Image (cartoon, rainbow, N blue to C red; front, side, top):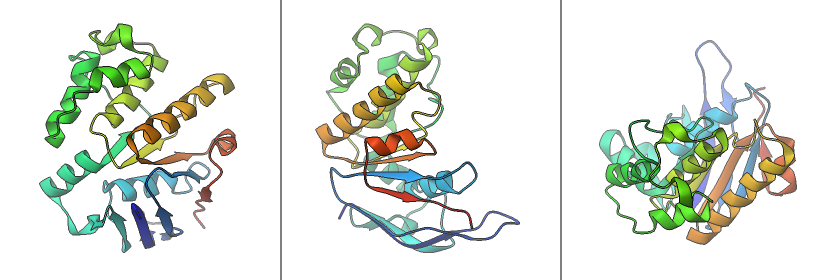
Amino acid sequence: MLLRTTDLTFTHPGQKAIRFDNIELSEGESLLILGKSGSGKTTLLNLLSGLSAPDTGEVVINGQDISNLSGQKLDQFRGQNIGIVFQKPHLLAPLSVLENLRMANFFSKKKNEKLKQILIDLGLSEKINSSTLTLSEGEAQRVSIARALANEPKLILADEPTSSLDDENAEKVIQMLKEQSKKIGAALIIVTHDQRVKNHIPKFIEVKSS
């Protein structure tokens, strides 16, 4: 079992505690986390990635309970095992597309000789050495996906990757995520309010704030 969560709860200041369903996910599996805005699905993503700590419960990734890690050890574990596709790309503007991926390697202390191939696979062969400032919104999103794959993580977390896309491009992004995660044997979790994604990932849970 690659990912297992047990009895997770989290409380935002002044609000009721959110209780999350238990999750079990094996290598190569895909899971959809659905929920309306404000339901707590992004909170769950933050718990799964170690960006937030739960009030109760545990998140075990590849045999490691991440609540037992902190500071530099947690950062290093996250960098080596978890690839995150944020809703906004957050690319480093002074760097080229390829250099953004190399920075991901640098921080995780991993080296991946396949970075250029990842970019080629995502249709970015002509942008490898381009400034990120020259990218379209769609290209920036693909670079964000490439950066999440740069360390060949065991778990890929994608936050609302289709929310601003039309049907055709939403389908392309989901297929891209599924194909690339399968290629490296990673589990994939997509967090979204977009019901269209259910057509592509049948296994899902719904997060409700009350």
